Image (cartoon, rainbow, N blue to C red; front, side, top):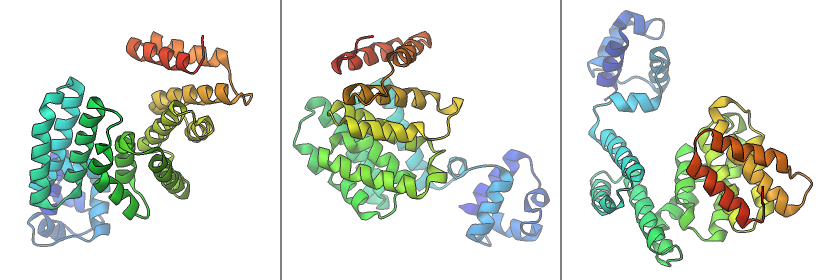
Length: 286
């Protein structure tokens, strides 16, 4: 897998073997790697990717490995079905995911299957007791992994709607602990902001305003840039809602109104109306 993919990327970038090898390895060693006669060390592999200026996600996209291609394919299919709201296609996708799980024994497919089953149950009955059973494999994985990575952060962020309140906060503490322990890395990761904002939203919805305030504050403590503008605006809204309910002196009606109006000016009318309803549900009239 490594050799073919590195060769494809090298040719795609228009580099010769000598140009890619550079001072990392010899041209002959690169030739052996590309011809599958040699497997590079992890350090050499990373150096080659850096020289090619590609990340692991892009490397996977160029890979001919069927297992990896199936991972990418089902993720893309799920995303498209969600965007198009073709929920009637989910049962077929679940069947496909279960077959892939049996074939590869890869929990990635199992977790996606759980996510979709949970989404279906949520739309049928948001208080369904079946949630616990459906999400058991996900919760078991999140419990088992001592130090979470991006995968676990994303998995939790996408599935905690089906967890009990105690489970949400138990895993939230684990996520925050991981973010704090590797702050330099997670402060620039989109998933950190998305997860914390989801938790702030969940906490505000459940009347846990102190928790919401803390989740939103952590996002606002990250470095800010235009790249994260939407996440920052979302955090500020959750922060203002929590501050209003806590009456902690941080509520700023003028700032909140400006944020909400900016959402409208950017053309997100549905989101604008949704925020207005949510604010009203917390007793905030602008």
